[in-house]
Image (cartoon, helix red, strand yellow):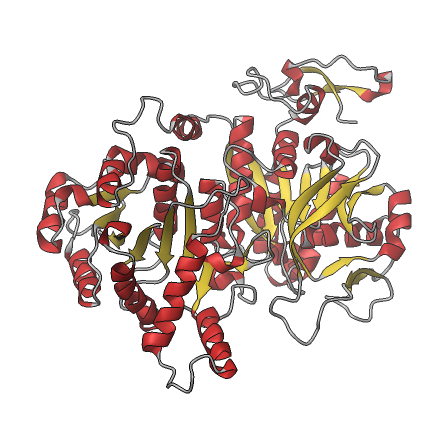
Amino acid sequence: MKYILVTGGVISGVGKGVIASSFGTILKNCGIHVTSIKIDPYINIDAGTFSPYEHGEVYVLDDGGEVDLDLGNYERFLDVTLHKDNNITTGKIYQSVITRERRGDYLGKTVQVVPHITDAIQEWVEKMAHQSVTQDGNKPEVCIVELGGTIGDIEGMPFVEAFRQFQFRVKRENFCCAHVSLVPQPRSTGEPKTKPTQSSVRELRGLGLSPDLIVCRSDQPIGDSVKEKISNFCHVAPEQVITIHDLSSIYRVPLLMEHQKIIEFLNDRLQLNISMPRPRHFMRKWRDLAERIDHLRKEVNIGLVGKYTKLEDSYASVTKALQHSAVQAGYKLNLTYIEAASLEQATKAEDPVLYHEAWQKLCKSDGVIVPGGFGKRGIEGKMEACKWCRENDKPFLGICLGLQAAVIEFARNVLHLIGANSTEIEPDTNHPIVIDMPEHNQGQMGGTMRLGKRRTRFTAANSVIKQLYGNKDDIEERHRHRYEVNPKYVADLEAAGLKFVGHDDDKVRMEVVELEGHRYYVATQYHPEYLSRPLNPSPPFLGLILASVGKLQSYLARGCRLSPRQLSDNDSDEDYPIVTKLPLEKLQISNDSRNPGTKVSDN
């Protein structure tokens, strides 16, 4: 087993996750099986109880693990399925050591950070490095370990010490350390400053780890003179200094690293036996994807109505899933974040300008997505967004809490159930449309939700969402929720036109809802964004994008395939007439100046 340790210096959030993923992408394209581990030095057992404002979104794995969002990067870049133990935290390590101490495993010895905590870290890394993360069951050959935070953080010290020992445990030819550091370029001087990187590398060396690669992050490209300076002062060869400036998309990072001969270095340093030189078509799919993203001209405007819009990482997977689908459809994503609370009537009285600005953003959107969340704040604003999309035939996708908001809004305004609500928001409501699940333990928050991959069965009806999934009878998607639609109200909701077209195996839990007679009004209880991939977008997201640009009907008519003409600069379905047997009243004349002529309505 070969190990690549990725550490960070100067500041956090410098891009270690993307760079670690890029190492894996390059090696995977060389035919090497790769796995990833993320280490978070916080004391929490997992990320499940975090507010999204702490570390961004909570990413959910197949096995129900609630982990750091960087594992989402690994899964998307490498197209692997990671396990909850691929995310190591200080809390998990200490919990395992204390459990062993209580069991008497240490034979009466004094339990200390060194050697007991550091040994536990090394054992955990070795164990997870050998776990298969692909469907074919192949054992990984290279494990990429990202150490969160920055070198020098007090909470990260046990992990640094563990890897200082680990490099001798696995031998030098099996261990490589890449240090990611910021090279700032102050406006006052306009030149890159290497002193922070020098200090960071010096501190790393003082702790017993010598970097084999120094990855320099910067706003603008760095010249060879700066690379040579870092090489001289940090005791590495010039070819061991990799420069990564801000790029047009993250998909260009592996290409830039490959251009700087990273494969040749790793092949020599870790004895990987990669055949050199690489073929001419090496990483062609990745290169084509990056080129396509850079040359998109048409735009699609999507409004995201959420509770945590002040930090974009709160919706990282949702944003990526929208980007994957937009690129597939041939559009550049223009995503607008709309604070849900700003759409509420209370905001209109308190801050009319903020209220009207939020509604203006919503009205300008081609499509709307209402993602998940917890708690009371902003729920009324989410319902207002659902109502506006329902009444104005605006493409809509609701996820988790978004589904619950859509169902409650429908119950209030179509079924006229006054005071209909969720027991999460109002425990004593007269019409509990959304209720807590029996297995949910109110006394304990961590790990008590319905988590991980679960099966959803579609009804016999030929729904739009079923077609987007390729007319499968059932699918498996990842879940993260405590509350569900009350089965007692399902019959009344369906009679009024809100169809529950997907449910669990027992037909008790409602998984997918679709509104009759609407262009695209779909909501899912599961989180489809977690399984979206750059070259294989999530079907509900693709449906939203296609409906927002007027291409959904022709896509479905072609058997869920986009034609080359659709991917060109034509704007909508009107350029692709579909011959279908429709009543005359279903045809309407479009007044849209961009797309004059007759079109088939989405009904």
